[in-house]
Length: 213
Image (cartoon, rainbow, N blue to C red):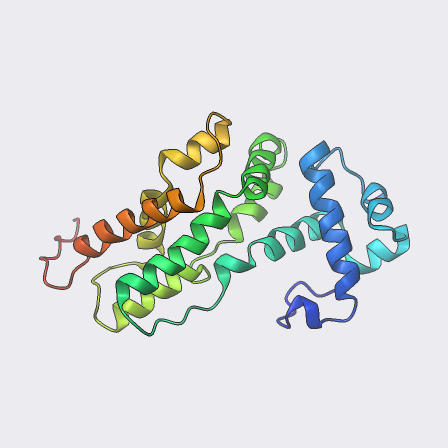
């Protein structure tokens, strides 16, 4: 499989096999750890041969990359920005926050945090999946800025700030395991408050801050 193949995963030859391998890898990585899991174990759990898994994914790193990319698809989805800015931004941000604070994504973050020190390449791969210009919230902010509805200097930086406001201490608590997963209602409330504050701060009629020298 070419990792830069742009076709939807479900439309590719062998898509069902890829999905089985990704599902099996996710369970094993989260249960045993990335380094402790072997490709043989993934193949066995998915019900395929060792030859088949290597024909599909040439390495465990390639399998991990495919897993991260597949699971993060919702926060990379193209955004339709027709309608009121607040409504569009709330909907887009809500979907992203729901994914980021989901138990499986928190589990993946803990996995990378635990094993990233001994495997910087793994941590870098996980981190770089959210490159500038890819995130749905960022696409939304960039489009709203082009339409003149908000004033921002850098859509990627603004996205990180907005996500931070929407999750804040909630995400830290989940990573540490000291709080329960938020309900959809709680996520909605956090998102609406964050968007309200953000839009007030980026309104076109506000004076722009002077550039740092």
